[in-house]
Image (cartoon, rainbow over all chains, first blue to last red; front, side):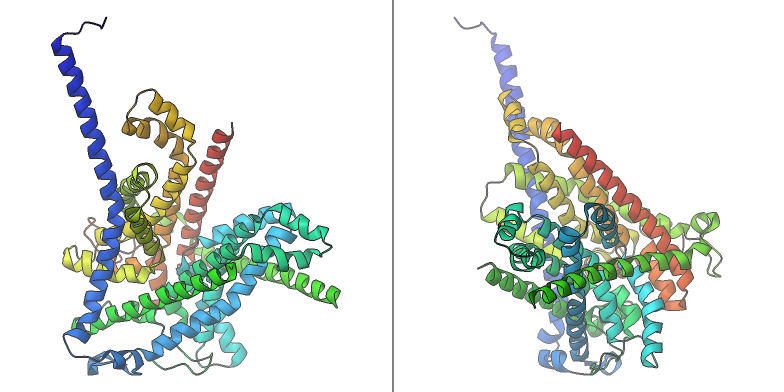
Amino acid sequence: MSIPTTNKQTVEIGKANKRKYMLEKLSSRIFLICALLSVITLLLIIGFVFYKGAHPFVAEGYSFINFIFGTDWVPSEDKFGIFPMIVASIFATIGALIIGVPIGLFTAIFLAEIASKRLAKIISPAIQLLAGIPSVLYGVFGLAIIVPFLQNTFGLVKGQSLIAVILVLAIMMLPTIVTVAETAIRAVPQTYREGSYALGVSQIGTIFKVIVPAAKSGIMTAIVLGLGRAIGETMAVILVAGNSLIVPTSLTDSVRPLTTNIALEMGYAFGTHQEMLFATGIVLFSFILILNFVLAKISAKGGN
Amino acid sequence: MRHFKDSLLRALLWLSAFLSVAILVMIVGFIFYKGIGLISFNFIFGDYSPTGDGGIWPMIITTIYTVLISLVIATPIGILAAVYLQEYAKQGRLVRLIRFATESLTGIPSIIYGLFGAVFFVTTLKLGMSILAASLTLTIIVLPVIIRTTEEALKTVPRSYREGSLALGTTKLQTLYKVILPSSMPGILSGIILSVGRIVGESAAIFLTAGTVAAMPESILSSARTLTVHSYLVTQESGDIELAAAVGIVLIVIILAINLSATYISKKFNKATNK
């Protein structure tokens, strides 16, 4: 026999259930909208930056080739060529990678494999902390220590140079590379080490022939993250780059990478000049996409 | 020969580690050495004065404003987005698209965010160079961070919690805010704290959207400078390394406090789940 309920009660329960289902449906919709917001903002960013940056080439008849390969940037004379900045950005990034990656990677290996637990426990958190230090401070350090050092050692008129940028960026990417690569190396299963030792391979041999290859994808991530930090860095670079508009031919030339061009001139630029700064942003953006793509390809190949 | 190669590599490992530590110690040492002489009660809590003997209180306030406003907006959106991705979404094309977008946002350099903020929030939405425009730009910058850390935190909640709760006849929503969110709270919190670090350390995007006015902001629609921008400007404009380093000390202390509290919370969290 069923429990006798009045009609009114059934209706009440039905209503409550309905409300519950409504709420359930509504909330999942809200969650979806929140998740979609990241897609929307990405589209907005690409849309606005590209719209602004493409405008001079599409509507005002400027040549994109001249923009990329032109060597003169004189906004007052309507000359917009960013070739020197592209070269400066590429050199600065590659230089920072050449110095920063080996030191960072070796430090990570040291901390994960060689250092005693006690030593690693002191150094690792300290380096992690340094990854969080505002990048401006690296620039201040660069201007106060590295720039005068270069000036005195090489007898330069002006210490602000490509090599100063490279050194500051290499130092800045160190904590990121060390922290991420160390985690990746520590994640390699202990059995790999034991297996290698059992075959009579030395500790160093095990590290470079077994552990590093096994941690390859994590190490690649570390490099990509460090690279991202270096290539997008702006304010610290302004302080040590010197910001001259020449195609650098030596490490001691004063340079102006893409990022600093935007930050230096956005404050007072308007009209076509401003749109050209957005175009500079597009070039920087494409640059990062290409680099990430290439690195992803390399690491995929390494994985096979 | 092999022995020689081994010892050479071993020496290089030691040397690299020594170099990394030495450089990084040097930077922090340098900032403290140069700046400590300026640190005083008046320097931190005094109003700014262009003559140079004033304090940095307006920059501290501006920094706090940007942190609060961006977090108030980014935290709920980020958490709910992560909840959708982890708890509600069916894996498929839409989720892949959202993940791709979130990852792409992480890779965009802050100067590009600055450009976007300058054209979208400052010009199109007519907010002007202001704390609000900068905070909205920062919201977009930290959103992927919050989404990812929240997702990681949600992943650590055991399946049995969900099943147990649902078996009691609760709805999905009730399970979410009574069971899942509370037990992943420490992870979510440490993600939020890390975002604070990101906001405090940001400079290029703020430089392009909040401007550089060195005065106590009257409202969130005023242009103002944060600590990082101040540190940059005093170096660039007047070459005042001592002042920049003193601001640097304040920044490092803030970052240190943020990191320590994040570590503390996640340690507590680990203890709680390992019980």
